[in-house]
Length: 392
Ligand code: LMR
Image 1 (cartoon, helix red, strand yellow):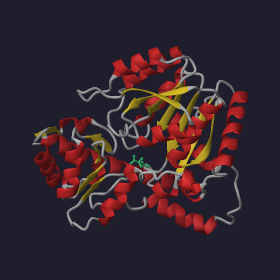
Image 2 (cartoon, rainbow, N blue to C red):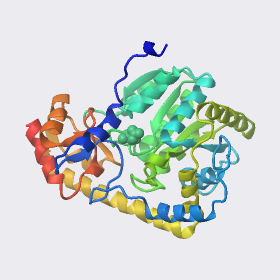
Image 3 (cartoon, protein in one colour):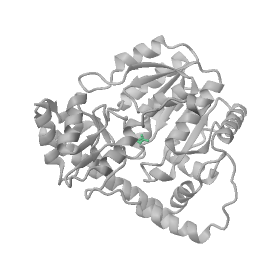
């Protein structure tokens, strides 16, 4: 039977990790998969996480099973950051469960929507390629609209048109902040409008918040999610700690459900638990427990927020330097200065992206997405010059 399976291509984004690793050129530049890098090019473990992990080794007295919901202390400790400290559970209407990374959370959100009878999901494109793969794998129909316009702003006209065309009961997936791959986010005024549009059209929002704190700050980056939740009766929120706590390979995420009342909430979560049990039984514990220990300790929380500030400051320095380059060859770097998070898109052809890889050792996604965190003050001038050379 196994002979019936056809060969699948490797995931294009993850394949870059290996291609880059195999390249022996000393001045190669990795702008591929979305991990933060310091000015020295490394991705060290957060100091707050290291301290929490040390503590975990000392105090953890069992690794017995927890259950499909994972570490609920972790799930609850994050909630004030996502939903606001006044009433993070929105009067008993929000509850969550741990998930294996942001991918696990998105997958569970889509599976829940599908099980609830949602026929299709609307999504601005381009988007993170794994979104579409998850819909396809779960048999969820995808309807797309343009996320950004040619001028580099969000395409509100396309979003309004999509929402007007959507049927009651459809889902819409929106990136909470730091849009992947464009870096082009909705403004607060746009979120105000979007919240009303989604509520009027009676759509189910699926909000993917994978980069909170990497845009303008933990509070600022939660604006869109909170605004939408204040307007609608129900929503699903997929959360990742893989970037803002640097937990990548430990797979630390959570899914939150906002329901119209506590009784529906309990029912939805029982479905979440059943789906998780059938998929991964329970999430890996270590990373979630380390994040919980950080958030339970004032000193470690302050250290973590400080480390997040350092990341954001470095990203804005890189972006300012790119923007200052202005027009180089066929590429205008100016818009990158006002975009958010790790990612931006360059208007390069497949051939130019390939040429950057083969002739200059610069690795970026085939879509033209760069992870700007791969740029340092030591390699940014070479990068700009090389892009100018291939796009002239
Ligand atoms: C990315 O977009 O590079 C990250 O979210 C990593 C991943 O899993 O794709």
